[in-house]
Length: 252
Image 1 (cartoon, rainbow, N blue to C red):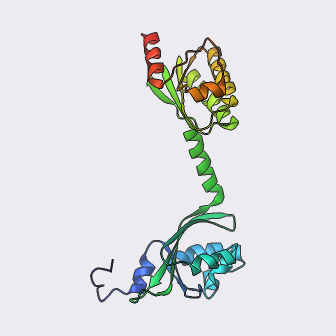
Image 2 (image 1 turned 180 degrees about the vertical axis):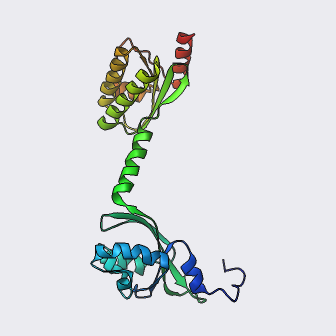
Image 3 (image 1 turned 90 degrees about the vertical axis):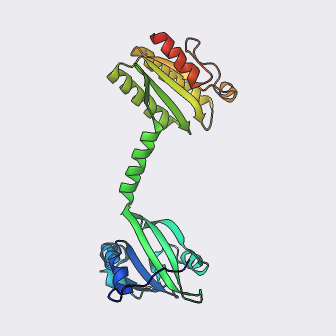
């Protein structure tokens, strides 16, 4: 689609680019950095020491490959670029950023240069910390579903670290809020192996020690083959609906 409308006479394209609240860098056909707006200049001045430079001004005139850990790969991507390219990159293993590279095409649809935008630049450590927090929050999704009853819908891959985190979180929740029943739904587990039996048995045994009962749901034929028999005293159901129905009847 072509641009629509006409720029007001008093507005220049250069000032418009410089006013955009994103880090914008312009490179020519040879991938040489030619210009950057003030937002990018501020960011690049902070990053310059990582490349042995003093400021963003030292980056003008350098080839984009000077900032890539594998210049040959960078050139290969740029040589084949005809449309917008998006990627997640690491800057000297200290910063993470989303990069968007867009060819600048003229009226004949041939490329005259490139616009490079760096967005959401943050330290690698902060990104990893936020990712870890997200993983932990998703790993143990505790949901209150009934009076003194919580549900634990487990989804994805279930390894030793996740199992230990789950057991600790559930025991804390049950002790803190005097939970009597814990409904564990296993139907969303991606991979079933013998470790499942061990972790589930451990969870149920720990819960019994603090006066809570474990109710297992989501038992499929595949799970039964992989896990074998759990304790005969545990209430086990094929789906979460049946398990919750059991809990409600016991409470009432």
